[in-house]
Image 1: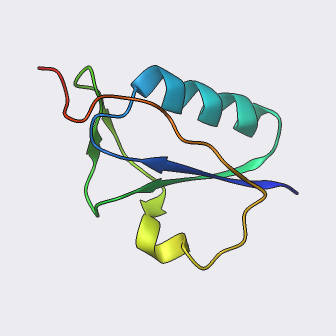
Image 2 (image 1 turned 90 degrees about the vertical axis):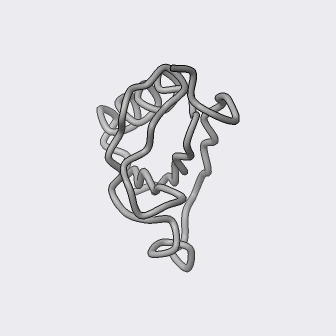
Length: 77
């Protein structure tokens, strides 16, 4: 089964992150959403996402694809 990494950082665009994660999982592709910090991620419009794991925990894993959601340097509040 293909395996995809989606790193989540503060200020990421929630629609880009959630939509790609949802579509890939519906296609039965394994997706790991990994946060840069070991805390929930506050997105660009204030939505808070809970990652599957911290990025440090999966850095040595093999992935078939990397998806980088866009976003703002800091969340808009």
